[in-house]
Image (cartoon, rainbow, N blue to C red):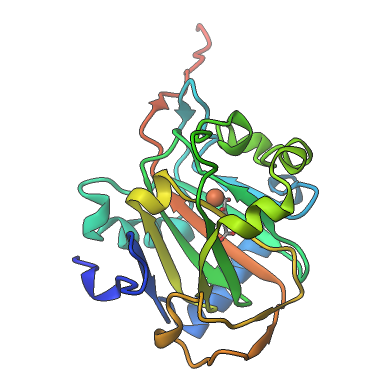
Length: 248
Ligand SMILES: O=C(O)CCC(=O)C(=O)O
Ligand SMILES: [Fe+2]
């Protein structure tokens, strides 16, 4: 399926936004599935908690596990978008953010095919993009090379990238409404950093690139609720699970 009609035309690089990608019933069903996962499936980080589905991406390769049917349906649907070419997402990261929680600006790094797609559940948020520091695009602390410890080394990063630096490098935001899908590709994936500010509410400004596709206006204040995001990605480097067979 060609997704050109969903391109955010106010962004100079490839960003796509589909409001109401899923229905309210689907949203409820997905939230039920997320919250009925066994407790050990959750990893608690300092500013959010997460679940990994499909395996743990690793620079040596991901040992693939089948996605459960409730995620596979959406992986197949999202994989049918032209931007994925002939690939289908094989990994899903679930993140839960309470109001006031977020994620430091970062790159998703080399473990993934450079298209990231996220279904947004339960609350709106603002996904913010930043230009990289000139000539310092390879700072290891900004690259996500292992999702098991996907905390983006937040304390180390804070000392290097102080907040005034991010203020200067702020580029644009996408307002993610509940039930929407965002797709980030090309330079927006490879060059720019993305993050979510640790705020309890957001004020709409002219930096919101997809404002024309939402019911909001500049100056509106939106209070955050608990948000769950489902990020679908394709991990190209995979390993076959080793089968240990007992001798008869
Ligand atoms: O929750 C989101 O929408 C963003 C998550 C993210 O950027 C990540 O897990 O790498
Ligand atoms: Fe990310």
